[in-house]
Length: 192
Image (cartoon, rainbow, N blue to C red; front, side):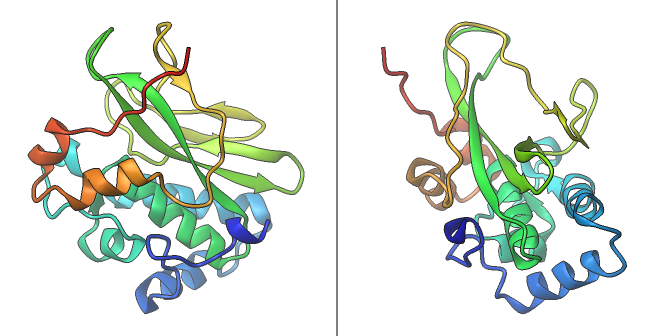
């Protein structure tokens, strides 16, 4: 589990503000589920989704997301991983491949998290931020994600990554504005 507890460039829970928030969210938490719920709801509800709110700058590192209080789903998942790892909860990054529109091409990746719960094992949760038509929650053992798989070229990618995918980091770091990210959303081709 060590890779899922480690500090890194993008999951930088050693940054003072991230570490302080992680301690504050853990204060008086009654067990692992309460701690995970607090961290999840903070990121889901207090960090605005960059595209939903058309907010710049484009963030990637957990500390940037917290500083600017905004991030795309990918960046928000980096902050959630940082807050949970800082509190000793193994946390990874997961992705879905979704249609950008109602159906069909183009497709893009959507970023979310998986946490290792002592009484459940790996459990996915999605802190992208709720809005009409999107209602994610922390409801173990049932998953309550922002998006369902709707068609054959969409996928729940099964991996739990310790670090963000390079294609995700590249898309965020190459973009100066939220419009740039939206025009160049990362994707992975499907293997037949």
